[in-house]
Image (cartoon, rainbow, N blue to C red; front, side, top):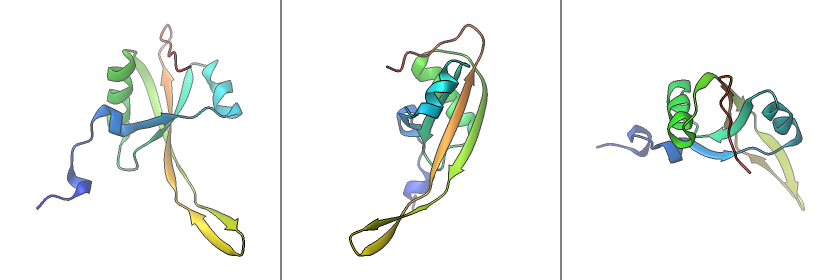
Amino acid sequence: MSSVRDRILSEYDIIKEPIFTEKAMKKNSLNQYVFRVDSKANKIQIRAAVEKIWNVKVEKVRTVWMRTKQKRFRYSLYQKPRWKKAIVILKEGSNLELI
């Protein structure tokens, strides 16, 4: 019996969304793009997904686990879950049009 963890992810399941923060937008000028990715995806899968979706050449992929954050709503505390972020560095001459 296969579980959800064992299923094969498509490119659109791996790359969830681009991140448009001020810090991430500064990286765009350096040919680096930041994405929220699936927690089970590895660097090889992320590279293949970006190359297939946007038809560009990827030089390097770095991944970061974003830690949980404690938030407050009225009188109760809750934790936002941790998530995985990927910084994708493109080769010279490649460009992404995200906006």
